[in-house]
Length: 157
Image 1 (tube, rainbow, N blue to C red):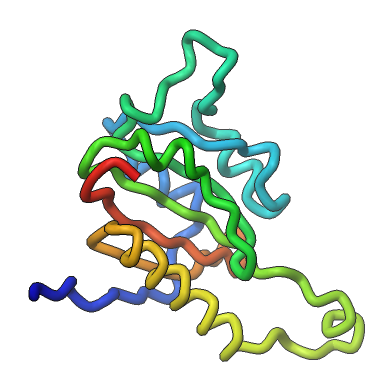
Image 2 (cartoon, helix red, strand yellow; image 1 turned 45 degrees about the vertical axis):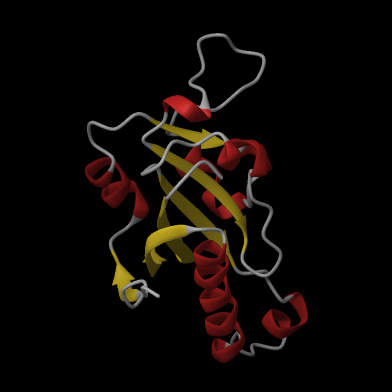
């Protein structure tokens, strides 16, 4: 039985607006449902072409080298139909936003770092369980606190 290499964790990271264009240069990239993503990552996702069923000029998942999407860290909503259509080797970049705890914020209590770390680790393990490989994860400095998870598809979906 082969094992995947250990997960690399990089904290902190460059701002997404600087890192993404460099990382994705020369690749066919699209974002899934940027307007439905958490507010903190919408503007980042809107910088990229959007996958759209009703637009004949929009890229399809099978044409992509990389797929971007935003979700909530604790309750992820991933683009299942898009994932199923990805080619092997396609890079997924998940921008996960931890849920705001309003009461904790009002009381001036910091977010629970262990709970967030566990949720972040769970995201990596879920991608590995789906058959993705080469996982990488780090936390964005701008937008602040976004957990960025990258992985590559072994096969469609």
